[in-house]
View 1 (spheres, helix red, strand yellow):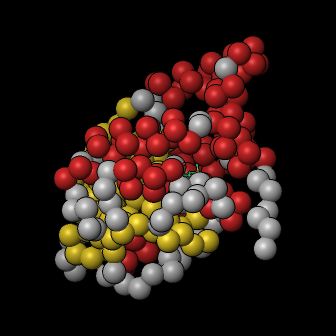
View 2: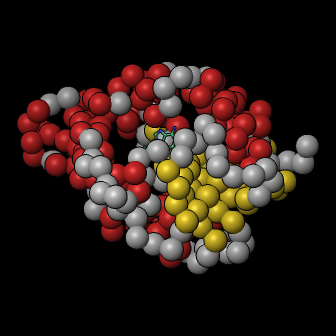
Length: 219
Ligand SMILES: C[S@@+](CC[C@H](N)C(=O)[O-])C[C@H]1O[C@@H](n2cnc3c(N)ncnc32)[C@H](O)[C@@H]1O
């Protein structure tokens, strides 16, 4: 069956960074979050995995049991690695309970249409699927002075014409504005939801991002 052509948002995401840039970014983040210390035979699921460069970074770090989940067949079709990837909605994960060790989301939660309900659904699903002691890793946009500054620069058409990456970012932001702004407006709710379900192991906020690792405790 032929793969659907990317829509306007997907096309902007595909031109935002090259796959190589994206893998380097994911490697930096994962190392900061402690991935080099996680067991390499852990069963790892990348949620909202898009075209799968997070999976490529995990593979480069030596992880061997990898899976990806994304709603977009057009984006998943770009992934050619060994991970088992499925088209599914992360609000209802296609995995049995207590069956995975690590779940990672990088830039997916801010696409959820309904807050707090959809966030609670994803977090409950991750909690259901993870084994006790398992890790939930979240990297998402966060309202910081840096992010405000980037969008301020992006409000000038000359800046967008001069810098293709900024133009791709602003195009994505325009097309996802309702969910993006709703996400950025509710940082306390987001942290409450994560921290009510997982014990925080690491948390960094800066440069327009939340980077967080939580551990699933026993029931
Ligand atoms: C900003 S992209 C991030 C992709 C990837 N994690 C990355 O950082 O390159 C957001 C992704 O979330 C996916 N997505 C949005 N809603 C989803 C849902 N409910 N379940 C699964 N995937 C979803 C989109 O198809 C898209 O690939």
